[in-house]
Length: 331
Image 1: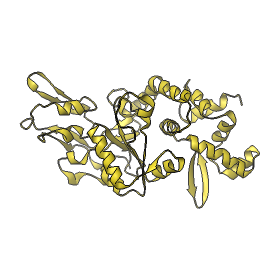
Image 2 (image 1 turned 135 degrees about the vertical axis):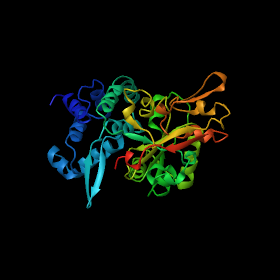
Image 3 (image 1 turned 30 degrees about the vertical axis):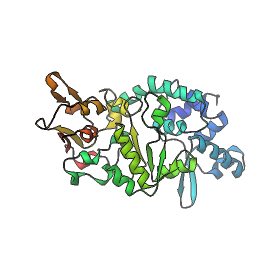
């Protein structure tokens, strides 16, 4: 196989067959020999050792290095460890950006990819109505009827029920550097926490610190998001519109399929509204605006149901109301 063919093959497995940049990203992360190992996954260390003419100890050293770089993941079942490559581009993106020894050339390629090729992928996701990668978690205090909130859409309950919690840098702000919002606010839970702790890319924290991070993120106007599923989550992102590879594209009709809104939508009680403008300042998707005569306009079709507007409203004029059924979140 030609030197670049293996990188193109790995790109194809990430559904980026026609990408010009993805093979270059792979080449920056791993050597052709390492890429050949990744291309042979899923497999055990024993199986790979036999295939590539190495001892199992030698192969484990290769796999450990690739795990550290963020391009190999482990799954342990019945005492047997099987290795796999990233499931999709976003997992590849996030894991390699957190690689502490990542060269600047890799970061530059990811920025170029994000600004040029990535939007096309999201347009396809939106066009074919593929399930969104992530969904918004509503800020609980902003919901009008709190007993409607399900466990998997309550950030605090998700943290309290987690087996373990870790915090990492936000990969989007670490990469794009477009704002000064808090960096270490990406909460990893359950398997996500253990994975990052083992890699050395995350720091184990307790529930008290996790609560503080949620509150700090809210005050900074960051939107909490998690995987778009009712299953056990592995992450609670707190991100910004300017840097996020998910939230940043949710306002464009062509790419908005990348992010699912919460089951809630902002509701404005005009009689209680004082037109202070705090909701307009904090809304991440520009769904709230103040017009002539201090008239506040709320575009519900643009609202993603995060509740940031309600969290800063001094008179309680904005609340979140349920507009989508529980089945809106995929099982």
